[in-house]
Image (cartoon, rainbow, N blue to C red; front, side):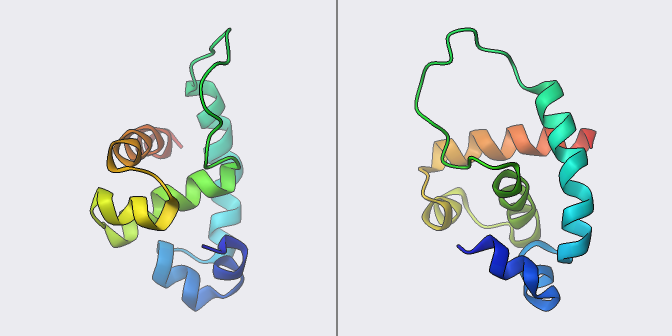
Length: 100
């Protein structure tokens, strides 16, 4: 999914995530600040690298979920996760979004 292309067109971004690209860019720094405050610090930094690497991808992911409310299986197909990983990330990012 080409996030930059979706955000560049207001009609497409509202259809995909429910907000315009301008609103998304205003929400992004707030989401990022809260994300890093709530993120647990792992001194060992082990595990697999995240598929949603940028904060823009994380915010887009959760807004896409809230706007379209797809099943976890469908979300996994769009973003390249299995359903249990989608569930974990949705729960994590929803908490961050609520605090933003």
